[in-house]
Amino acid sequence: MSEIAQITSDSLAAVLENLETEAPIELDLSTNIFDAVDSFAIVDLLLETEGRIEAVYGRYVPLADETIFDAEKSPLKNWATWNAYVEKCIAA
Amino acid sequence: MWRNALQPDQQRAELRFANASIRGIVTTVGDRMVDFVAEAPSMGLSEADVARLQRAIGLNRRQIVSGDETTSDLCAHSARRLFEGCGISPQDCQGLIFVTQTPDYAAPATAISLATRLGMPITSLAFDMRLGCSGFVYGLATAFSLVESGLDRVLLCVGDVASKFVDPTDHAIAPIMGDAGAAILIERRPSASSFQFYSDGSGERALIIPNSGVRKAPEDEGMPQLMHMDGASVFNFTLQRVPSMITDILEFGAKEPDAIDYFVLHQPNKYILKNIQKRMKVDDARLPSDTQSVYGNQNSASIPGTISGFLSDDYSSRRLTSLFAGFGIGLSWAAAIVETDAIYAPATFTGIKD
Image 1 (cartoon, rainbow over the protein chains, first blue to last red):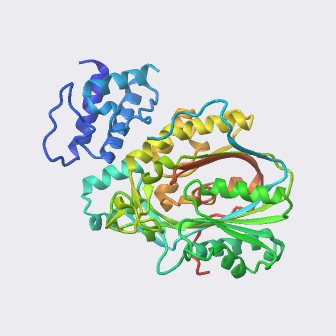
Image 2: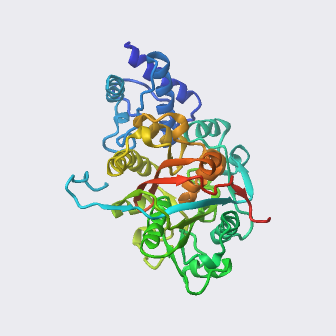
Image 3: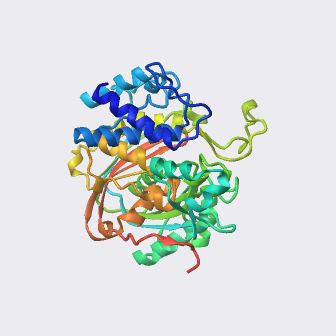
């Protein structure tokens, strides 16, 4: 698992730990997080991921943009897309 | 969806002023402090929900009115303190603009009775402006226009008792809203300022109080007359529009970011403000973001509310260049770069009973 994939999956695990979801979320590359959790959990995931990126890379990388809550374009609708999105944000 | 990206050659709503400035700012908040942890059970929130909402949005506590106090009551209190502090008689003020979404009545305009309550002469002008979170910047520009056009002084009153138009059990919106009313005195004095304005009615339903006017829309049938928020749409709108607006007003005002002492933005939630701050590469101290956590979302009063709540010493004591940005319901957003010089800016007043 790449460093970024580790960060994203650890972040999601931390968020889900305190979240009551109707059914357990099985994480694979096609998992749709956007439809599985509420908007506050998404903001929580952004915060958690940004915090872990800052701890590893030593700088703050803002992850939220106008696509995050877009029902059609959100990178969180597919876990592989989310990982690619985070990688792109770190590289920017 | 919001309309397409702005065209660079598009005619913009932009204004510059050279002879209008802020003399003082006073903010009064509701007297009742509501602790988020204490109210959470009534909204069906678990301890884990509370923890993540506190982290994600910055919810902590808020100030709301008790009883039947209105926005105009809060603004009247602020205005009286403002006139006293500036040593100005209400008789020497020729205009009052009242920006709110919670007027005393649907008709007549609240500004007229507020002007009378304050002791302003019948030879003054008074009118309401129905705007929310962008309202302070719009009201300020309108007041500046009136002063540049000939009035000596204009009183701008902004605010809302937003707690009265939310369902108290709706955890998506009730714990966010605070009640505040601010008064700002504008007078003729050499001072440079720049303003930009934006409006996009295609986002009308992102924040709306259904059944609150004459229109009876089929999709509103049976819906309570309470604020409804599509949080995801508002979040997307903010991140799409606000950073670019800040870049544009800096360009229009011919200022580098380092020339701005304070970026005082509307305060919807801590995460959005932190995101904007980091994207704009502005240090923490120059972009305050604690208003939501202490007072709640003060709607059109959030910019003066942030100055009164967290920056009163600095605004009271020295010359400052500020960037103001308001954004929200409408959708409506606006920004300004304004100079102030040791204005009257006491700390926030809590409640109107003094």
